[in-house]
Length: 230
Image 1 (cartoon, rainbow, N blue to C red):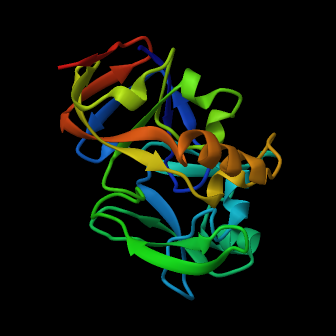
Image 2: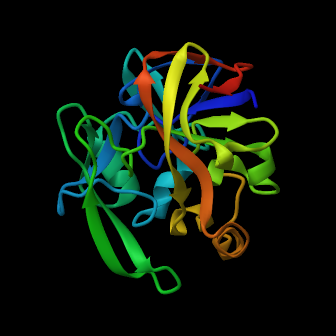
C-alpha cells in the first residue's frame, strides 16, 4: 500500500486541507485537531455529532493559526463571528495544555442518551490514536470526507496491519480499528445527509472503517510513500 492522499483537520469537526507531505510527532500530523470550538455555556468542545453545522465550514493552518471559512468564501475571523454563525457563545480553543470533553449519542436513531468523554492532553482527537489510515478498497463508494481520515491508501489491506509500520521516515504503531458514529451520516458541502452510510458500515464492516495508530518515531510522511510492516 502507498499513501494516496494526506489530510489534516486543524479544527475538530471542520473540513480540512489536503497536503502533499506532513511532519508527524507524538500528537499525530502536526496541527491536526489542534483546535476546537468550545461551547461557553457548557464547556464542551463541539463536534458535528451535537452541532452538524460545523461540517459546513473548512479550516486551514496559516502561520500556525486556523483560517476558518464557509463554502461561499465567508471567513469567520474571530469568536464573535463564530458565535453569530452557530447561534451560541463559542470560542476557538487550542488543545495545547488542555483537555477537551466531547459528546456522542448512544441511541443513534433518536440521537439521544448522550455520553461524554475526555480527550488526551495536547490534542482533540477522539481516541488514544493520533493518526488514522484507510484504503480506497475499504472506502468503496463512500466519500472519504465523511470519515475524516488522515492517510488514504491505495489498494486495500489496512485492516490486517498490526504492530509497527513504517510510512516515509515515520514509524507508527497500529492500535485499533476505528468504530464509527452518527457523524458519518451528516450533511456537508457536496454531500447530503445519509443515514444509510452508517447502516452500511455497520452491516458490512461491523461498524469499523479505518485503523488508528500512534507515532512511535517522529518523521515526515509524503504522498507516494509505501506503508511497510516492520
